[in-house]
Amino acid sequence: QVQLVESGGGLVQAGGSLRLSCTASGRTFSRYCMAWFRQAPGKEREFVAGITGNGGSLHYAGYVKGRFTISRDNAKKAVHLQLNSLKPEDTAVYYCAADGDSVIVSAGAPSYDYWGQGTQVIVSS
Image (cartoon, rainbow, N blue to C red; front, side, top):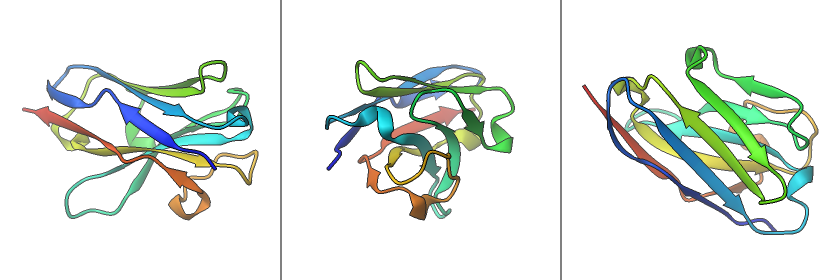
């Protein structure tokens, strides 16, 4: 069982930055592929970025375009998402997710076994 807790969301002006963090419980954090998803009002949840258990492989959604960076610290059981050059369309609830069944990052939400409660990001224009 893994519990995930996100933090770091907030209100920021367009062009600004935020750093989201997700801390995990459990002893096998390094075995999990981790990902960030987001869900805007009235829209489906979508993949943002993912990282393999050892941090050796990173994957991003096309719309990220170098603005976001995912990283992890297995010693601290944490995964981070650095959001730069934020746009109003980045406004969403951002969720951290863990996949314990694969060594490959999946962009599909059903692949993930554990989810955090989400952290709200609001980007004003």
